[in-house]
Image (cartoon, rainbow, N blue to C red; front, side, top):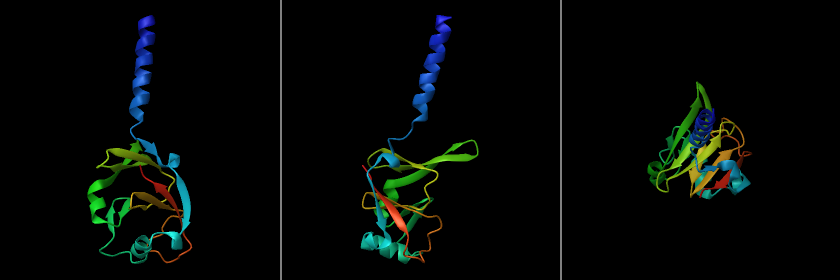
Length: 138
């Protein structure tokens, strides 16, 4: 009976530790709300000029600098047919970030910061009254 208990306990511990496959939740990072006109100028220009040759997309991530295309990528973590969350991977630093499914895409990365709009379907950007959450990546 004792061996069965140890076996079950070991399986539970293994299962719980294997479920955590990210380093940071973005909800745990420092955040500030920014209006469109408070964003960095290059980011404002990139969003206003979309679609353009200076904006790079990798599935759900929007990148404004080509060097970031090599550095960042994303991966959807699924439970059955449903997306549980999005994982953004920083390949240079070997760090992963968990973005909850309820956060509207695109996930914009610029100057080691992650910008998430407050609404869905913001591209192409017609209105300037959109707010963004800015997270400082580690």
